[in-house]
Image (cartoon, rainbow, N blue to C red; front, top):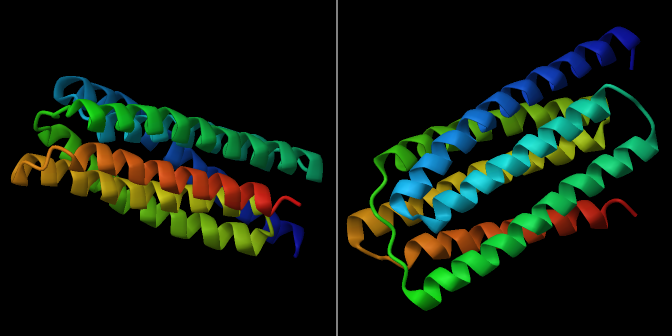
Length: 196
């Protein structure tokens, strides 16, 4: 690949990660407030997922600014470790909410942010996947999958919170948290398996 094309693709990767980073910094604040006022396990978990996405974007920006296989391996391990930490926290939190019968309060703010986030993350994921493939950068491509999962999780959380709010299915909120656990473990496994 010509150096000019690689440089352009790296700049695009930086821009996509910068947008993702900014979006998730705002999202952590919005979701923290929404989860505290509503007591929603799913919104709290999605806020933690936004923190992980911040970490993942930071790792990709670091990786794009340098080179070498060792740097890529470290970046991928950090992203996988963040996913496993999220899965463990949510497994405990969602399990406790189900056992205790915890009922979340309605959260219009959480519903609105999560719906907008789903659309934004699917768009960013497509751009990262395309750029990562063309550039031949496995870290950017892996983080594109992280962003796609973020969009899926936003959809799952939105469904859980809406079912809780509209149908009174209190268990839908912690079950949405467990959906995040599944995807977090799956994504960590996918990253670690393809490193060997």
